Amino acid sequence: MSLRAHRLAAAALLALAGACAHAHGADGADAGAEETRAADSPQQTLYREALEALAEGRRTDASQALRRLVAEQPLHAGAWLDLALTQCALGNGDEAERLFATFETRFQPSQDILVLIAETREAGCKPWEPVRSTVVTAGRGIDRNVNQGASVTSLVVDRGQQPVELTLLPDFLPQRDDYSVVGVDYLRELTPNGSVGYVQYQARRNDHIHRYDSAALFAGVESPWRIGRWTVRAGATLGAVTLGGQLYQRQGQLQARATPALPLPAGTQLTVSGSATWNRYVTLTNFDSLTLEGRALLSWRSGPLVANAAFALLDDRARTQRPGGNRHGGIASLLLRRSLPASLTGELGYTRQTWGSAAPYAPELIDAVRAQRTEVLRTALSYQFAKHQTLQLEARAVRNRENIGIFQYNDRILQLSWQWQLP
Image (cartoon, rainbow, N blue to C red; front, side, top):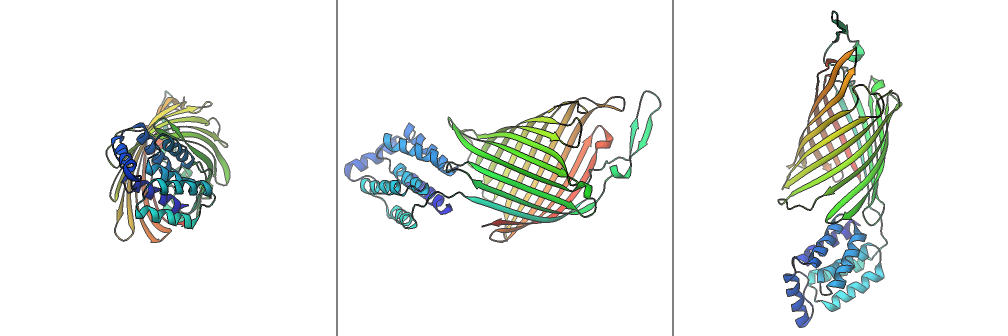
């Protein structure tokens, strides 16, 4: 399947570059001039949409667009060739052969394209097979604050009389431990038009403090849709999290993301998304919530350097009488990734998240309205030592600052992990 995708991309590039020869005789010369004059015509717009659909894995949408195009513009050589290759990739061998024969008769293909067609015929138009991807991860790490223990050692309570200082128990102070982590990410195409299903599992086990052992299992589906000039990918996810061997949280999410058709500089892409997440806490009372998020992600690539900048607004609505009530917040992040010599890749990331509650956290005990600011600095160095295997050394520093002292904490994590992408 990947070979076919490569052939489709190669054919599209050859067609756009003019590698397809013109139709026989004067008609062919007229067709070439017509395509040049129609660079911004509705037909060329339709052709670009078809190529975008191929690049995004929406083969059915691409096939429909190309059929419309060859009906409206019968002398568009690139559309005929791409339609034939797409039908072959979908397993429609008879239809692909008819299109190949028409293409060879109507046009005068270059030698490169004749070779491409011959290779495609030799490989055969096998029925569509879904692409699968499985990534297994295992690692060891050191966590300086497994329990997110407070940076302070006491809580001062002021009930209108003399303030009382309450000393925190050792369980609420930072605790260090080593840990092991394993994870599996599985993704599979569900339809020829780009719908996918995925399952993600990750478990972490501490060497000593097992009440903070955790595991998470999520599964979801995602499908692409074309709305005007926008491609929208909409999906749903269900998941569960355990803590200390007990079910801790259930979660469900609906999400949609789109890439607007904007005139951005080369190598730059803007993606916008929105999501609604339902959180159900099994072992906690009055903490269930609905979180709404709107996010914008700007990506930029130049050679070996990739930069991502994201900004999100959050609205976390309490379902019951949660301490502090509703919350509003935001996230800002920046990620830099660069390919280095000797099969190395370096990453540097920074994230800042803020939350502001709507009401006092616990009247008569903690009268303050909670305001939270969390900063995470992350750096990683990856080494690809085999075709599908990578080692990664990652370091994270977390600084959580709040106006309520007992919720403040710092953490530092160092983790070495091995990642294997199954062939």
